[in-house]
Image 1: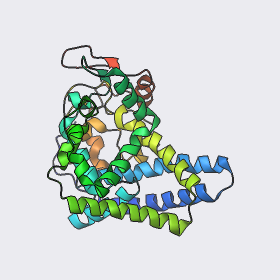
Image 2: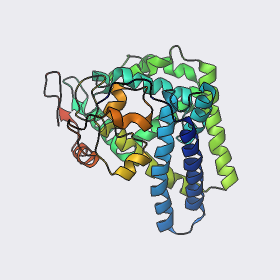
Image 3: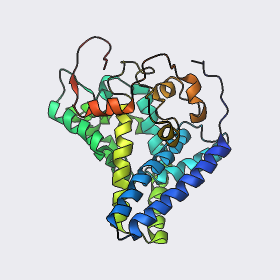
Length: 307
């Protein structure tokens, strides 16, 4: 495993991938809306769930500032890719970089029941992740922030309740205390306008759009914790480099090399494989995913948790 040292950002490749992935996503949304066959609609939705994960992975690069070496290009494409989630670039950056700081801390330990946890709430969170309900939270939170950002400062979301602590809401929303409110709201508004423009230009039908995004929600959401579930309690090492089909790995732009990413968050996706220790345990995504359906486990004590 290498030590990170200023890997080049594949800016041109990322721009090309964005053009291809966005074009494919638009085509699949159109197909899902204009076919009379539910078989074709579902096929389009499944394909969309993977293509939109490529777009999300490119957004992830922009969040870390490694989509393109020119900051203006990085931010512009970050805003475009965010619109396909949909979320806002600044909103996503605050939440995601906060996750890097809190990784595997008590407020982001969704895979274990801690002694003072509300177990029904923990179970709701957990199965919300597995069923894709988790995907709804960023768009809804963006809408709330756009319309009334003061809601984020209410005591109930800032340590004033067990729900805020256990769901990590208080920790996540604390990052918005110094956020550039106007800029973040404009980026959210931009994403809404992009979605509206897509609906109008492609004459989308709600059933087609919902089918595509429901498939994406399940696909995206399941990976968001499979790459952390039952890994070690360490902010940098608390993730897995998951084994997955090579084609899927490429579609997700090496997102499954998640431990390497947490150890070296400034390394672009194209170079992450260089930082994977292939001699250490690398469970398969399917193994982790299937175990997740058994639910959270009681906390065993100590400093670490294992599969």
